[in-house]
Length: 185
Image (cartoon, rainbow, N blue to C red):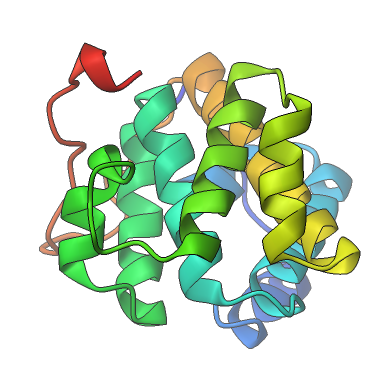
């Protein structure tokens, strides 16, 4: 259960969420204590999910990598569902922690994952940026930087509020993070 109580969400905002293809999650119920912040969150998150030119598969891999690095079960669970819906192959998800050694990830995915890890660590060096910029246009770089940065923030909020998926999808599979391999961090 969240440290912050869940709030009723304005029906118009619920309709907005469902129109965007989403469902009312515990995260939104918790953020509903500040309706304007929830609305801004929804608009920004769904812009990242739906209005980018980079592939949703690529961005979901980045988001799942932020969840792994932050050890965020909630983010992993939610984006594991979204990744599957976006067409991310299960084998890539299983290999994500080992992306550097895996043959499954192409040059663009590798560059985006390296950029993601640098953003999570709080330091993007010139070589990492240059590698990504070789693969992506300036506009695409903004999409990737905003995606990785936003999804670095999400686990911090989830941790601060102790949010769980409890009661969200009764009967559905709960996706859990694989055990942490410290050698990969």
